[in-house]
Amino acid sequence: MATQTTTTTVGQLKVSAQDRPFFTLDELIKRRALELGDAPLLGYPNEGLLDFEKHSARAVDRYVDVAVQKLQHLGLSSDSQSDNAPVIGILAHSGLNVVITIMALSRLGYAVFLLSARLQSPGIARLCELADCGAMLTTSSFHPVLAEVQEKRKLDILPLLSHSDYYGKDAPVFSRAYDPERESTKIAAIIHSSGSTGLPKPIYLTHKSCIGAFSVHMNMRAFIKPIYYGNYSLPLTRQSLVQMINCVKPEIFHVVPYVVKLLAETDEGIRAWASVKLVLFGCSSCPDDLGDRLVKNGVYLVGNYGSAGAPAKVLRTGQLVGDSKVGEWNTTEGIPLMIQTAVTLGALPNLDEEMTWLPVDHAATAILELVNAYTTPQPSERDTDPDLVYHILNPTRFHWTRDMLPSLAKAGLQFESLPTAQWMDKLRKSERDPKKNPPIKLLDWFESKYGRTASANKGVLAYMTEKTENDSPTLRGLSDVTDVEFITKLVERLKARWAAEGA
Image (tube, rainbow, N blue to C red; front, side, top):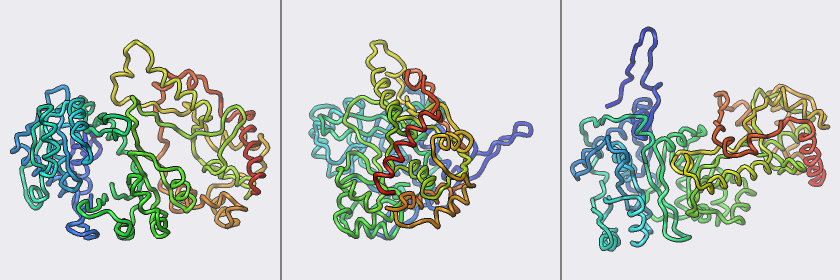
């Protein structure tokens, strides 16, 4: 097992196992076992709602090796020479055994196709056809619907592993030889759209794209990342959700909109949501009235993922600011509220921070340009690269204190520039009524970024924009966002809004 740090020496250079890059999801699991050892990695209830058993990173790695052996006994072998990872589906109600099975299939080199337990046979058959899935791990409750699928296409039915198949058991450490760079571009997992606009469609995730997403962890503990899973064998009720939140005290809670609505139906539920730093929902939209009500009651609600089945690549936006024509900017956003402290406190912080701002109208134009890039008849990298990501942000960075503060002063704001710690102290002592002093609403957020509890500075996170600039003339030709004329538009518009709001 990968439980010890190994060192390779080249002259005086030593490279520890923890410093080596990883290319696949399985390498990520093994790295966590190496780094965390017996520290808890995930928690899952044994039988009830709150009797969480914590499983260490080393134990999870061992479970996966045992599960690999069980899967091999079912006839699933590994093949590192194929250009594409073979696809195995899982149709089952979720649980720790499903999580371990996913990891074991990944260790064997398979792409794991996760199908919704609510799908009917036509949807399953179509998905299997599109994803070239010829085998399904499942439980007996799904045999009837899969029998209907087998009437239309060949599909091998295999028994899903149970918790007893791997828990408390040992197996030889499994390893397979492969080219890491090549393996990273293979499909790791397949999810699918809901099918609300037609038959569901597969959505492919490579090892490379998954690892890129997982590396952004926000330094928070979550139900899905140590990772706590609810007991899927118990009914999901409002009271059980409140009890789980009070027990685990997660900082991030990953949910679907139905769960958001379920808990939001009572004041107790809304207070429970508000106790979580980030409520992250996905798979479908959240009704506007529900989202507005939760946000007004202090819930930090964020939409993460949804699909209408339309072809798409990843568009990741950076910091959007007021438009370039009139400077209209939402006064309730973080940066406008910080700028407002020039009025409410008479001061702005001397942040040692680089930023990248993109006027919202330029962002909208860039998105249209990137979408229209797909209408060109010539095949290109856009059509074949599964990991293509467009970073829609200003390629040119500026320094807040050296570049932006002088422009804000020239734009008509009168303020004292203070060291960040002094500015924070001034904010803490300021008027607590958010109607008179709107920036106080984000005191906790400012504390997390610049206060005593702020995480250590890890440097600038820079995103590559070359591909985006290549396909977006707008981003190639952006003007300087610290230009005094543009900043004056923003400041004048913000001042007008502040005056209208009585702040």
